[in-house]
Length: 257
Image (cartoon, rainbow, N blue to C red; front, side, top):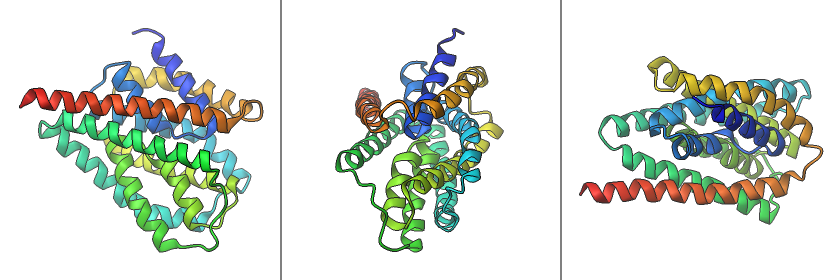
């Protein structure tokens, strides 16, 4: 086992701290493509890692009072059942011999999440909603939860988009609320994978070792680097990575028939 895992954890945590980009959408495809983990193991490892990294960031936003608690409650009302359903879907797909289909689906989720994030950055959709719409926020969070449970992706890009659409929060409150929302979903989904042993403990330890330092550095660099440009570059790269995963999964499926 090389130090590549530590470096990956460090870079992902820096990206999370600097740009606010979702950790799951970054971690899962990297674990699959560069470290060769199976889909279910990659998702489980990513969820536990993301929960650990966000543990360091969440208290800062709570202390700054940059959490929209009402909006968070609405999101969790839909997101928690969603992440449980997504975890069950992933388990059913991989246990039923549909790992390649799950790989293609994960790639699709990553590509779509990154594309939506890139579109929001290009259009600069940072204006808060005119009114709080809790039922719509809860409903949209069901789908986000399913995506997080199935692929570990979605909480960052889609959660932020939902908050801007359906909640009257400042940009800082949107980031803090979405961060805490993503943490809760990652902790729940990661907890199931941790209990079931569907994660790679050696890689996880190295990811967290690098991620702890990266999270601190990322919080500092957020005032140095232009976050919008970095998020755009990461989103564009993730679109390509997601398409690659989708192509791999569909290619393997076609060979099986």
